[in-house]
Image (cartoon, rainbow, N blue to C red; front, side):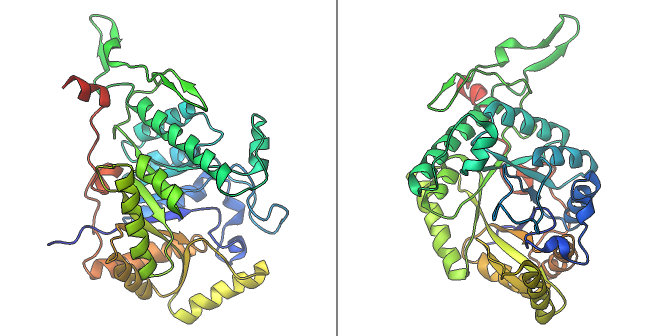
Length: 387
């Protein structure tokens, strides 16, 4: 039986995922707040035929709060994706937007707009925001000191509602609701617009959305997950989950855990499972390790990450990718240690190695992000009810 296509994504964040990446000789720290910087990165990923890029976002400065020798300040991820969208043609654009303090109506509108202006290449990385200082930015809620599971369970409960409401809002316009009938003066068919009438613990939303149904119908919803609770959240509302195995054996175990979560929520279509890897790539293993070590010295500590850290050659990374893939992973989200260096190594060196081994595409084969990932366009729920 033919093996399922391998999928690759790149996670873009600031100057790279190493805290000292902005001090790398090849970094462009003066350009981090420019459209040109982000456009160059996404075009580089598109040159490598990657399925999509994710664009990180957060409502706070990150850890540790008091350090001034790390990148602080960022652009809004959805707005960056919207700026880049008309300048790219094939690659998916998946910005991060929080489910905790952002109104689901605004999230649904912004992402639907991104899908329209990118002609069906938008996605969403939904994440919670549990920090007290981030809640203080909005002044509507007071969060407790980090107390473990109870607070996190509440945030994931709210996130579940947000994703559900956003999905309902994307379906609140049927595909043929806009008729533009000049003779009768009817721009829309009112019978094809629907209230969502959601009432929950954290918010109530009437609808319909102000933006017509996105070209993909439902955008690709993604989430990062490290444990049973977020696995269940992803299984219940997302299309794709990023996981963080340390080796192939753990990857197999995590895939099994995700499948159990799917069964628990009676999910019909399996989640796409991508492994996150933080990568430093050079011509030799020693060169890559030395580069990371220099950055560690600048930062004053060895790099720690929730994801496995790979230092080595493009050939070595390709070996790992193909080895772990046998565990049931659908793809990988690669986090470049430094930008643009490690992103260029992915698109210009890792991808050709995978192509030579017959494991990765040589051209884009679909026009939408869902299409690239082999996901069907969902039928509008209201149209489905009439069938």
